Amino acid sequence: MSVRRSSGLIGALALALALTGCGSSKNAADPAGKADAENRTRVFAADNGKITIPAAPKRVVATGYAVPALIEAGAPLVGISTWKRGEPMMGKEALAAYNKLPKVAGEQATETNYEAVAAAEPDLIVIGVPAPVLGDIDVKRLESIAPVVAIGPTVPSAWRDLSRRQADAAGALKQFDTVQAAYEAKAAELAKKYKDALAPLKFGHVGSYGEAAKGTFQREFSGSWGTNVAENIGASYYGQVKKPGPGSKGVSEYPSLEELPASLGAADAVTYSVKADGSLPESVKYVMESELWKNLPAVKAGKAFPIRHTEAATYGQAVQTLEAIDTAFAPLLKQ
Image (cartoon, rainbow, N blue to C red):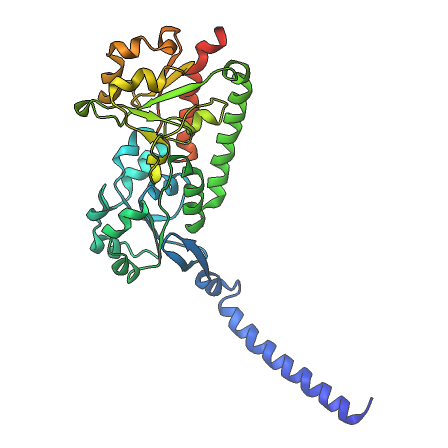
């Protein structure tokens, strides 16, 4: 080895040792690289574009459909909107967490309290409202507080993808995946249990959003709130919306009560939405009190089944829906 080469190697080693020494001094103050980890970011594809967000959020504010999803996923929430419509479907622990969290917005997007959001000092804001409603929120103002990801609902059955994306943004997929697995195991169990009983039946569904004052009822089709969980265990809902629109209008319609026989007359079985306590919503009661309902072939055959928790928007809530469906469909196993 030449002297020149040896000298160069020695110099390089010395420089490397010097750099290592500097690195060691820096790591001594932060041995695990914690500061770098906490400052890491990633680009997340949301309804409002590709947003740079913390890789591991520590303080999250959630609104709309993101509220039940992120409570269930165990996200680090520091503020939420109210979500009264979902309270009856929340489990004991989820409801306790919901009641404890500061409310920084109301039921409507227009009821966002921007000062309260800022006071919560979030490092991420997850907005779970439909895209058309996003215009009611001052997103620019929220973006001055923290990165904002909008992940809102489309068709009712999309809650599965919706809630997963919300949990992903909030860095809470681990607990989310556990709850999802429990739902899927329950659905598979019931699908096996009711396979033979459900296979020959064509179902129809009466939802809870008809308007008795206008003389209408809600007919829900495949992929709607009242049908999508039952479909996971093998129930088949026939027909389609005559004039599809965006969102839920693509999977449900609102005929007049006089159209009930034409709408549901071909159904072998009918399901209908009831409240969490099992009582009838006024719109469903209006339908069931009519002679037209009582004369439907499915009703006369004893194949009309009430289903609770039809508005489930998380896997945990949907487990309750599965349990309600199991109770409702039990008579089919005896026929």
